Length: 159
Ligand SMILES: [Zn+2]
Image 1 (tube, rainbow, N blue to C red):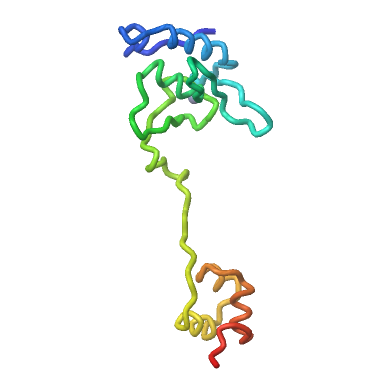
Image 2 (image 1 turned 90 degrees about the vertical axis):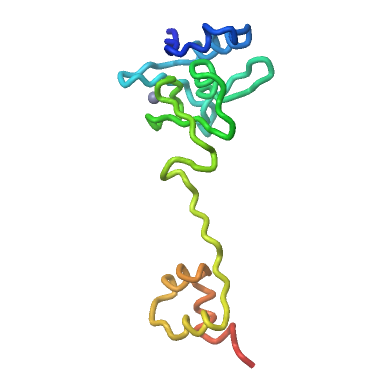
């Protein structure tokens, strides 16, 4: 099995050195399956099935990142390498794309919701509301037992 190098062939430029030749060999060896859609699959590693990496000249990197570097050149600053086929074990160069790390593709973004802090206004709203514990807990970013304690007059009691 061999990897087909792209038209913009990084390996044919003066940039090529022994380390890159080693990387080609290691990547080539790792490819376990070529699928009909063009995916070139490297086997997952360990019980957590992480995407495989390999080391060349002290540089330990993901196989798909090596594939990118070999076929398309250096990875642009601040970018990560994703697969358009959504298979994280795929190293096919035509399935790889670079994306700025802080702007991940849709659906991969983590939703960070700041915890709402309670104040007397919110406590009054909670006590006046007819919504259930779960609804209010979600709305105010607190645990349902917090809502219950407020309603039962155990917390947020004015003296
Ligand atoms: Zn693929």
